[in-house]
Amino acid sequence: MARLHSKRGAMHEINVVPYVDVMLVLLVIFMVTAPLVTPGVIDLPSVGKAGQPKLVPLEVVIKEDRSLSLRERDASGRILSDRPIERGEFAKMFKDPKTPVLIAGDKNVRYEAVLQVMDDLRTQGVERVGLQVKPSR
Image (tube, rainbow, N blue to C red):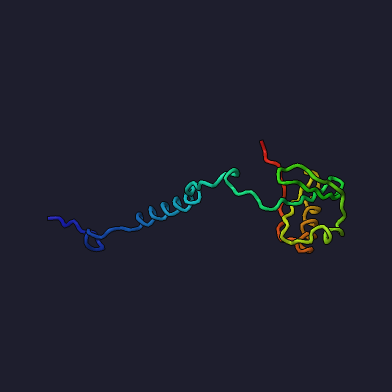
């Protein structure tokens, strides 16, 4: 009678090396695909639902030649005044730090000029500074 044993021992030993290989491949697949999974959709309110600002912001307009002008609007959006100003006049113009200010820069103005105006406004104590943009169509 022939014995069906291997030289090492009993036949009931399980070789786990292939299982470890499969687990490592699955781990790599999950690590690659996890960032591609999109999170849940968030239903944000539209602009029409948002509250209108209580104060009408003043606009500092930076033209292509880096000259500045101050534009004031009424609550309906009509321009009340548009006059040229200098950077040194910011302290006189913006006495109330709660007044919101929008910076409207020409698209050909260097980013550095916009940042300098923002910095000057912050130095004068203006707390609410934003950038005015035109919505794309």
